[in-house]
Length: 236
Image (tube, rainbow, N blue to C red; front, side, top):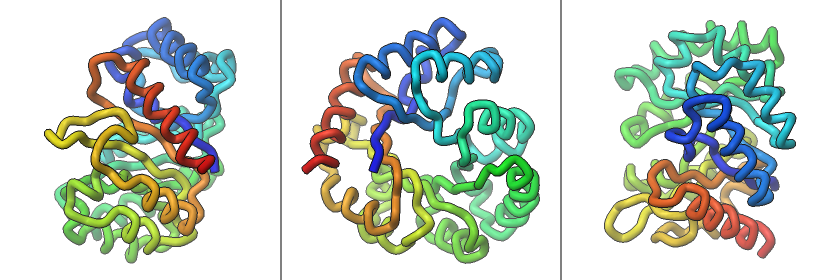
């Protein structure tokens, strides 16, 4: 199982090509060579993103964004995946909680993605996990699942049980942590049982675990702490 860092964690630092290059340089210095693309400022051209990933030797497994964003700019997200070699386009959240309407839109997008050898996955957020996410996964048995341990906990679910319930459909899992006060903190420093989440991820066939933390005091220090935790966890 590979580990990496969800690049969305560095959102404020990726407003231009220079900022993105600095982020990738720091990630590589941490030893990180795997990521999922999200929230890089769209002023940075797709070919530049692809060139920078190659320059720093970092593999993008695909791209993720909120579902309305993806549906609004399908060409951009498909081009981003295709140009960077990412085989997965992940949509986050079910608009208006309507699983049936969302499933129909996914079917249409699936046809375009398949032509580029790109698969689709779904990243449920807290609001989806009251039932809409489970309905969607039944409506679209071909759809991969990209779970977020923190979102599952926030919804009152047991992350390990949820992840293990979808064997063969999970490729990427986001590991994000919260401190006692509810704030985001470096992965492994909060209250989440990541050992159980890791075992469930393995049961489900996950290939990549990503450290994620969108709020921080020192992005590089705190993401490095989370990445080091994943190194120890996956080698235990």
